[in-house]
Length: 109
Image (cartoon, rainbow, N blue to C red; front, side, top):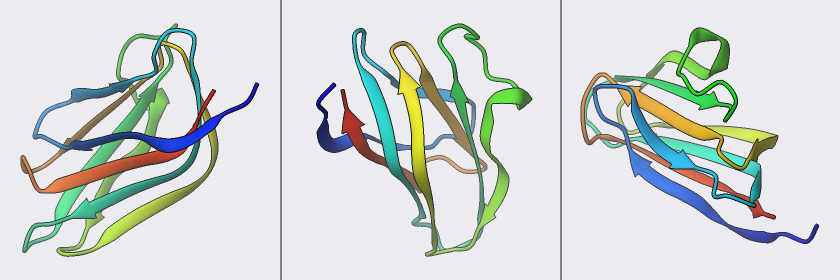
């Protein structure tokens, strides 16, 4: 299956578990990099979950970034070939709203 390199999604975390991305029907995403930035002047906590379509709920078992401290003005990058199938979702939260930005890069098939 041929793929198209692209930004798969961009979002800003809030203070509660929020659904940010859902892989469209008949698509598959091969993630090459996930970039998370703290734009605040103080350290913030970040949590991200990859929920399989069959599971449907945020849980400890699908956490891809646990409650992690991200220093002010810093970023985290996660590299690798994670595969998200149609209906899979990305959820996230922070300890403050509007200061943690996330970008997911990869290939859509």
